[in-house]
Length: 215
Ligand code: GLN
View 1 (cartoon, rainbow, N blue to C red):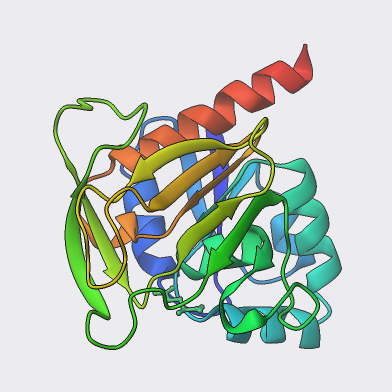
View 2 (view 1 turned 180 degrees about the vertical axis):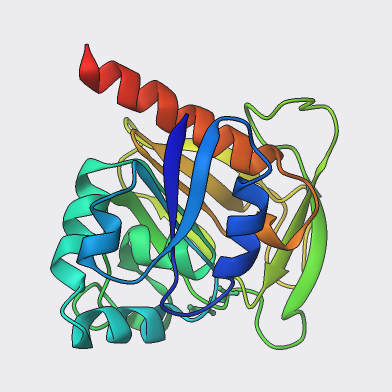
């Protein structure tokens, strides 16, 4: 069993905690707000919300450096705003890393608010690589969601899910979830569904990664 933290500075953290606590592989899922709390968990989830606000709060409170160090060295999953924070670059709006503060780690470039205003929120059935019952579509909830614009490190980054059809100007085949080593990122919000398969996927990925480190 592992102890999983959910970054609780802002956004949909309570929902992640509830879903994580349904898994037998998780001893406890807890809210994380500072360096002291993060030092007691094995893995971290960064929820959806507003990426700029989360970064600002973490910086102001002095939590940013230990958060960044944790993400560099422990299994971490970012959903939506969390995916943005785990990216190396932001393409859309021309904002490169440096303009918006990012934790980085995923060798991808991200386009924020990719679905524009006309299609801000929607649900899309997705085939997610490696899920249990993979033939059953996963309900992808997209809320002012980003998409993965470009894979910058194709040798290291695995594509886990793509859009199965066009949504507004965003074409079918657009990448919406990736995995790289100990990091997982999804543009959608599995915490806003009743389907815990993505949470199980992350927890198993975290357990495997931790076991490998101990060898
Ligand atoms: N648009 C938000 C951002 O840029 C992300 C939206 C979300 O997490 N639902 O942070």
